Length: 430
View 1 (cartoon, rainbow, N blue to C red):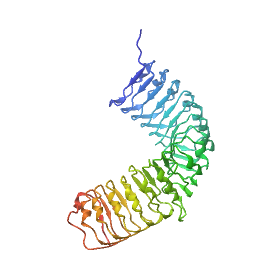
View 2: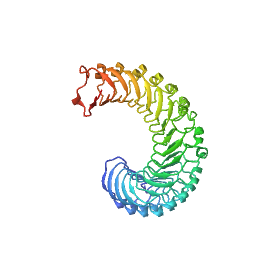
View 3: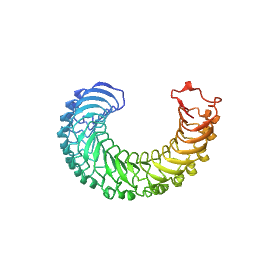
View 4: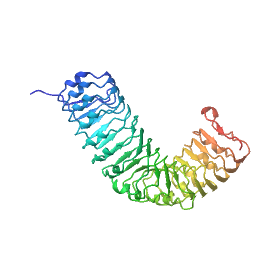
């Protein structure tokens, strides 16, 4: 009985050089895995002779040239991964003949053209990953024929136009990422009713307009929502039922109208105990900041409220979020003092409170925040002496206390030497 090679797994062996065309003689090969090596040159056309091949993994090498059309002779291919190479040109139209293909991963190359319409012929496809290329054009409506599509990664590219309406009927979708493209249009109000399996949606850094779909209130499976840097308007729906939510990014939109009840949705987030990040930076939210977020878990680490119209006192309850590493509240209308509970922030790295109406003394407990490397208190109404305890912040690299009413001298005792880090301590016009 003749023994045949059916699997060749050389992933991560630090191999380099060109791939021998003689690999095409391994006619019984089912799985070829060469990931994480340093192969260069073109992908041999002879791989098209591997008629039994089901998995081809060439990702994270330096293969160049075009994707060889001969690969489409491998009619049994189920998984084709060419990510992380230097491939150029368009995706060959012949790929549309790979009827058994389930995963197509061609991201992190220099591919051009668009997402071709023949993708709609790949009826078994459930994973399509094309990020970090130079793809342009619109998302073709033919992609709506992929009734098993579970994952679509197409960020960043140069895709444009509107998302075809039929796309919102692909109920199998779990992860969708179209970040950093040029996509236009608004989102249907019922999109989360039809995309009811969605767990991950990242469509930030596009040109999407209109309101956040009201149906998001019932999208219970969502773990990540990135709508940042678009042209969204209006109010944020109540999303307190999204108890699996970990990341919420709404920054740099036109949300809110500087009215008093626009932050009500934040109250509902107190039920989202898995939250790790909230950013509503650079919008038009107004009103007082609710104290209910102090009930979030200790794994909550980033809260960014900067550049809005939020007013009132800083809730002392925020100090209960002992896992915070970044707290950005700058350039709002906060007033009063820094709560003493902020002394609990033993993991705090960036505390940004500049551009408000905060007053009182600079609290000595700042010196207890041993992980702090960025402290911004500029453009407030602080007064009194700068506490010597600030010298205990041995990791501090950026300090801006300018445009306040501090008096006295800059503390010397215990202050870390300015030569040990390059940025300036911005203490001008105290």
